[in-house]
Amino acid sequence: MVLADLGKRINNAVNSALSNTEDDYATTVDVLLKTLVTALLEADVNIKLVSNLRNNLKETLMGNKGTGKSTSNAQTKKLIQKAVFDELCNLVDCESEQPFQPKKRKTNVIMFVGLQGSGKTTSCTKLAVYYSRRGFKVGLVCADTFRAGAFDQLKQNAIKAHIPFYGSYTETDPVKVAAEGIAKFKKEKFEVIIVDTSGRHHQEQALFQEMVEISNVVKPNQTIMVLDASIGQAAEQQSKAFKESADFGAILLTKMDGHAKGGGAISAVAATNTPIIFIGTGEHIHDLEKFSPKSFISKLLGIGDIESLLEQ
Amino acid sequence: AFGFLKKHVLGNKTITEQDLNSILEQMKQQLITKNVAPEAAAFLMDQVSKDLVGSKTAGWTSVEITAREALTKALTQVLTPGVSVDLLHEIQKKAEEKQPYVFSIVGVNGVGKSTNLSKLAFWLLQNNFKVLIVACDTFRSGAIEQLRVHVENLAQLTDESHIRGSKNKRGKSGNDHVELFEAGYGGSDLVTKIAKQAIKYAKDQDFDVVLMDTAGRRHNDATLMSPLKSFAEQANPDKIIMVGEALVGTDSVQQAKNFNNAFGKARDIDFFIVSKCDTVGQMLGTMVNMVYATDIPILFVGVGQTYTDLRTLSVNWAVNILMS
Ligand SMILES: Nc1nc2c(ncn2[C@@H]2O[C@H](COP(=O)(O)OP(=O)(O)OP(=O)(O)O)[C@@H](O)[C@H]2O)c(=O)[nH]1
Ligand SMILES: Nc1nc2c(ncn2[C@@H]2O[C@H](COP(=O)(O)OP(=O)(O)OP(=O)(O)O)[C@@H](O)[C@H]2O)c(=O)[nH]1
Ligand SMILES: [Mg+2]
Ligand SMILES: [Mg+2]
Image 1 (cartoon, each protein chain N blue to C red):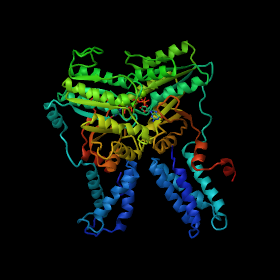
Image 2 (cartoon, rainbow over the protein chains, first blue to last red):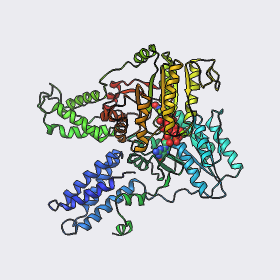
Image 3 (cartoon, helix red, strand yellow):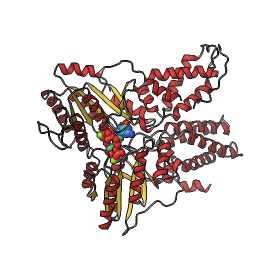
Image 4 (cartoon, chains in turn green, purple):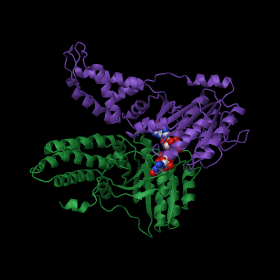
């Protein structure tokens, strides 16, 4: 899970720092910040973000004069937890407004973009199943004409999931296939049309140009960038470039069942101001979960009751 | 990027730990921006420190420059393989004994196993070997069809008259040089069965090389990892190659360790292929992480999505990028 053991580490750090009555408040804060920085870096969070977060936290925590000996440990702990919570929330963009919701009896086009092998094709079907179970009429379009076996992969997934699909074995232009697929499903009054595209990276301009062209004919209501939870420091650069060209409105984080902590993806969120809305937790079609940053972070910090914390 | 290494042209100074502290910290941060895992970066700093504390800087050389040189050395040491292997020669030797040389390719999901297996096939075909590609990924949708497309492409590249979709004289996808061995989709029992059948088939049909693709799997899931051991015992490949992607961050350390341990005490991974190096710019840290974690050498790096995008690793090139 994203920063799975981070919550534990922070809590341990807070507890052990506070239990050491020899130390003054400043030392407590110092120890805590050190632990936090180490944990975040080990979780692949972008190094600049970590250093910003550290400075902000230090300012907040040290700015609270009068805390220390006079207040109880429990109060200090709450104060620290709240400060950490706020900073982590900033990182994963808790503030963003209501995410995209497809509307019934309308055509809603969703386009998937992302790096090679991130999990686009797999996640496309998962999302199709997700909306299909919620009563939408959903179709899948394979606009990946590059990757060997891409159409077969989507087709086999779609058949397993009983989702209608469109693609071509012979057409090599993804823009054309995308346009045809959209036209077909629109005519048949499909409500959610999900378009899968090839993997690409910003170093290859032609690939980005192609993505823009597909987007221009598909006219997506929502573009989703699919990110692998294990991505490292390259997350920031790549996601920024995708944001500039494809202007995606949401991130779907895959392979969260793995061992990676997802800090790279969090850096992508921060770099693009775009929220994570779903996470992939396995290779099967039902392994998709809605993601809510706020409750996620409160869980990871082991805070049962955020509201009481926020009222402080 | 190492601009903080200001030059103090003094030289001949005995280096203390204190002199090094802030320099090491800054070098470590730089390595982390290049996607070197904090753990691997700390190891490298240790090497530099061991190398330098108590020694004297050369004339006209600052501590910073000396430390930089030591880091270059440490990185070079990590990335330089201990033993060099002439694979083509080994394959040739086995071919003369009428034994196919067997590779299996393993790794986590989506890193580029199948694609880089196809690049390997292209390289082997160019060296005039006959290659049997085996579809041991019987799990992921489209995995077999993906390999079939590659076999068709490779058949066309080695024989212009090859018509796509046509079968060779044995009634299989491919031609005389490259062929696909597959037996459909199914569970892990099927995988071992296919592997054994394929090797026998390759021997009977005079293939020089067998390349086995396997399904991507999470390195933290024992139920997915444990079949690897029996697979390797049954198929007994000459070389096990793990593909790791340059995009992965700190998890690369654990990925490499867990895959290496998956085959039991008696068997290690033989090589890495580090794929998607074209997607990370200067952030080549994954290479360092994987080799640091296991001491297993990098056979090739993947630098793109076509058959020719497979290179031997130039250690100098990588170290220069990591140090820049
Ligand atoms: N464990 C796990 N594996 C996943 C998840 N999502 C996708 N995968 C696997 O990741 C691999 C790559 O997934 P794809 O859907 O083919 O990725 P893609 O982005 O479409 O790849 P390209 O089209 O080649 O760029 C496959 O083996 C999937 O089964 C996930 O949430 N968990
Ligand atoms: N840019 C770039 N892309 C690569 C490279 N190697 C592989 N890819 C791409 O990565 C994606 C995934 O490759 P695959 O070969 O299907 O990966 P895999 O490990 O076999 O995936 P699974 O079998 O699903 O686990 C494809 O889109 C490939 O084109 C590389 O060196 N550079
Ligand atoms: Mg795909
Ligand atoms: Mg594969």
